[in-house]
Amino acid sequence: MEESGKKYKYTLINYITMLDIKLESSNDFSFADSSTRLFFTIRISGRKENVHQQKGITGNWLIIVIDQSSSMVGEKLETAKQAAISAINELNPGNYVSIYSFSDEVEVVADHTSLNDVKRLENGIREITAHGRTALFKTMDFIINKARPYAEDAGSVTLIMLTDGQPTDVTDIHRYESIAGMAAEYGIKINSIGIGSDYNEEIIKKISDITNGEFYNIVDRSQIGTIFGSYVQQLNKTVATSAVMSLNLREGTDFKSYDQNFIQQGNQYLLNIGMISDIPFLITGQVVVPPGKEGIVNVMNISIDYKDENGSSKSESIEFKITRTNDSKKIFSGTRQDIINAARVKMNVEKFEYLTSVGDITGATKAIGEARKAAEATKNIKLIESTRKLENIVSSTPTGKVDKKQIYNETSRIKKKGD
Amino acid sequence: MWKCSKCGTENDDSYDYCVVCGVEKNAPPSVAPVTQEPPQVQKEMTSVPAQSTVNSPSVESQPAVAPPTAPPPKILKIAIIQSPSPELVGRTLDLDFSIFQTISIGRNPENLLQMPDGSISRRHALIELKDDKFIIRDLQSTNGTYIFESGYFTKIEGDRNINVGDVIKLGEGTVIRVIQ
Image (cartoon, rainbow over all chains, first blue to last red; front, side, top):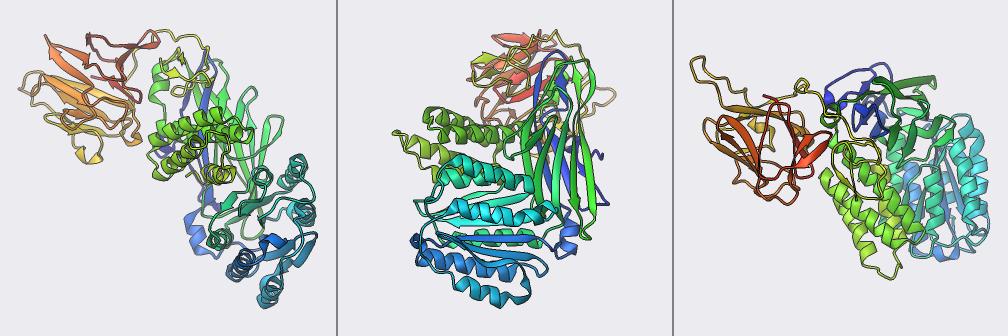
């Protein structure tokens, strides 16, 4: 472990491999006589020189899923088709794409296809026309099972799904949770885009949350191209694929993440990260260290297994260590207020999101107030604006009819991108 | 609201752990901390012969060194151990009382020591050299001035002597320690 000053005590800069892994904790100490909660942030990204030196690892799989139900007719569908065409033209050769459209049935425009014949793919996309209803469950179930063998064989799968309507086949959110859980297990990241005012934000947001994807509520059609483009840019700068993080906790230590969905197996927590680019992948959360005798405590081991540019399996790990003490002064002087503030924003945003989803607007208002105060302490302008916006949304709708689409758009960005 | 038994922070009832020091809600209070070595500082800041703003690294310079023949310096050395501005945490500051008998602390620029913390009042507190002793006085600030003793931050009312090792909280987000 390299120590480069107090701020980055746990920074690991590995000069042999492709990744930068940075762990920062709100304190290097915990109380010996009481349980102590520590906030932490982990940032994982490709090392800049590697990102710039190479064109990006290929072999990723980009899946684009477009709702072609009759309500999509006109500009909405045409903009989505154009965004898909731009994406396949911008994606580096050597990667794979699938294009699916759906209404009453799933239509396969292209299935795990290389980018050798982009014109043929373009023609297939142009032939998508609006008709029928929105068989969302059937579509997601079909696609997740299609992607499963590749994903399970440790390939990185990025899925973008765009819809504008309520599902007409299955409306039970638990069934979506179930298939999203399988997707998460296989390592398929589902990013969902809702367009218009009639789609079911609870369902598609839940799918994205469970698979650690992002959720977008589109109010301006031009955003579709921007979102598709951002994923293509990330894929083109891939430095590692098939990344899986595992956290092995010391017995008796509690763990919680505010922004990522881990799969728990006893004292081990697993997270399918998929591909890693130069854009940091963030994990923010807390650990509760139990009381015990004074001295150094290894709170958890953090390992990341991934594949490099040659397809070789690699693994990196760092240790999260703190010191238990009875000296309060050490604890007070070791406090990292910046880490605390950033974590408190996400902690309260997550709480706000949950309370909003269950209709507790009073509780949600209080939680977002706490998040806004913490955001102000971070002095991050974007974060302050986002939390103020959310506060305004809930405070301006006393009847409880809050715009959840708009709310989830903001909360998803805060949780995943940190602003 | 509940008061943290370790650092005295007032926490919302919905929190199970103190938002500042992280200790659980019903933790026992600490025993009085033993005096320890000053914290390892990252940077030294200049003494305060005139108005100083603790919000920019540009005010850094070499620490004041008294000439060998001069009388003992009337300098109080403090370290900032917590601040909303992370770049200030760990810095030390020499408060030079050979020029001013009192040094005012607050958020506004008219103070000799201007602290970038929204929870600190415009005119928050004074440190004064009186009868060869340093005292601190809260100026009826909104969020108070506290001294850490017997496991708690205790609010300072009136004049209070300060000594090496004392930990003082200004408002909600700034904590300093007297180190020399």
